[in-house]
Image (tube, rainbow, N blue to C red; front, top):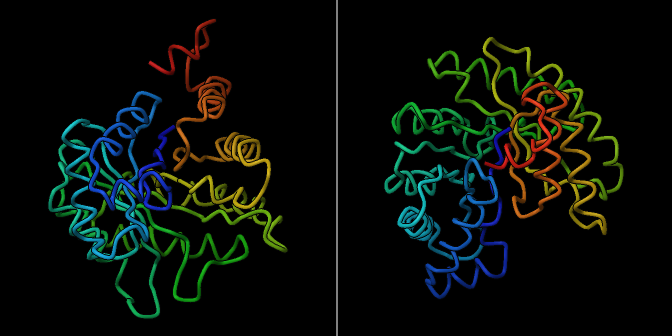
Length: 271
């Protein structure tokens, strides 16, 4: 299970302040602590913390790479911001470009651009693609799967290894009216997405989106992650500082026979 650590994001107050003050130490400490907590990748998202998103993502990438070799996940739906981050990314460590829809009303070729940037960056850089198109986020299983199939087809047409492709079926806040059906729709979509090609694309979710606005955020995230792993989810943008969540990942992998049981399996997984 690949955990993409979520905390280097301008939506968080400490990160926003660090960006404004150009305080590298806050960013570097988060990078090191998330890595130590088990992160496979570090998400890097400027968000609305700076007007100059291109310059800021470069500052974030450079700050992190001064102290940490963990692969980075450049997170923006703006191709120009991703391209800026790629200019300073050490692609030899690996990386992900997050996130592109299939298409947008004002950019019919956005997925093509993300795939081309990843291809040029090198074989260790992948793409996270959303099951979303110019009509927005689908509300049912069938349309999620149909968009995922188009994404996979386009990647294959371009000779992009599907093992470098991560499909995100988009979790929606469960507290939103009429959204409680969505987790089941997502799980059903995952059951089909994993059979779209061989080898199958990875699947990921922005886990914390599910529990936005609820008063049981950690519990909701933990339970859904375990459920989704049993349906083929092998990656998530999540909170590595939630020790119980990380233990659930380790335990789920053991129970799914992906890790060998021992009395110290949690310590083995963490190491």
